[in-house]
Amino acid sequence: MTWAGLLAGATGCTSDDAGGITGAFGAPPAPEDVIKVSPDDGSRGVRPDRRLRVRVPDGRLEKVKVVSSQDAQESPVPGHLSADGLTWEPDEQQLALAAKYTIDAVAVDGDGRRSARHTTFTTYVPEERFIGYVAPENRATVGTGMIVSLEFSREITDRAAVERAIRVTARPAVEIRPHWFGGTRLDFRPADYWKPGTQVTVALRLRDVEGAPGVYGLQHKTFSFTVGRSQVSVVDAAAHSMEVRRDGEPLATVPVTAGEPGNTTYNGKMVVTEMLDVTRMNGATVGFKKRDGKGEYDIPDVPHAMRLTDSGTFLHGNYWAHRSVFGRTNVSHGCIGLRDVKGGSSDTPAGWFFDRSLVGDVVEVVNSNDKKVSPDNGLGGWNMGWNAWKAGSAVK
Image 1 (cartoon, rainbow, N blue to C red):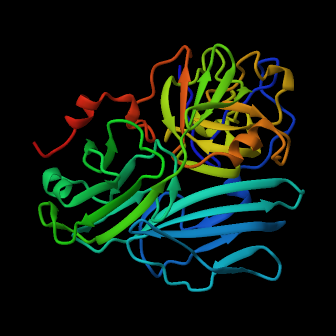
Image 2: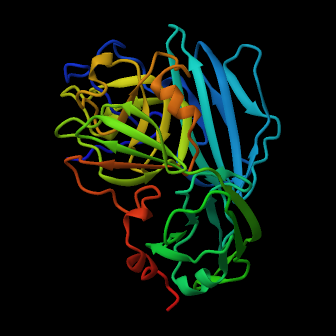
């Protein structure tokens, strides 16, 4: 059975060095009970007059970061804390249309327990229109495994028309081809990883393109990103080690712990899609429950967390397992753990790796007793052969 999870209140994998579940934290409250966010996590079509607010019933908010993403451009949302530290609100209450909002909040409750919460919502797209939410962000510097991915706000039935309206080019030039995953996702990549230093430009000419009967595109936008140095890390789940290669040369070999028997880690090539200084991992949200319905584990402050799949595989810091497990045995619920300390530190293997990583870096897992990760799970498209990838184009 393969572990899967969700982020920040719906993520996680851990166990102690004896293979059991750590109980050092007692029963911390659920993140949604500590940090209240409105609109609700995962909301779609939120009207622009809805109130955006982050609050805690007691204790205080330590940090709130809100970002609005529109047409692949990310903008911080300015805001302010109330005098009592219980509430955060934006300076401008009107929400942007056709935007994705991301909220990251850290709080301490009345008993001094720290919690982290990560939520997202998307705002209303005018009727009979569609847009594509694009990764990576404009002007980003990414690793060589980055795949251009568009998630559409509406089901696309005329995929060929939409595909023709999107052009992805590179300098130096390389063949780049599209692949559809269902009717709402379109990814672009070359046959092999990008070369370091490549400049990639994405032109969206979707305005007035009919993606479905009576549904027309809204965007007319060009953005670009830069491919940085190459970093590919290979995790050998059987040897409990990770070899990090920078520009093809060995940089370091790091001891790790991967998924335990029954909760093994996916094999295959995965791409870092998100990097979080701290997040919460709660087993109850991913099916790891005790008979009383509570999670087998609930860790409120997992440090140095890097998302590898949409289903919840992370490479993250681990401070709760005994240091003797790293490099010797697999004890997690499917994630890849590197030794760390509570609160995180740059002087640990996890901190060292986090500080040297980019969104778009490749982490490949080998010798795990599990299947290969699906090409549509995160940016897993590198697990598909080039001919099969090209066959996923709607333009024949």
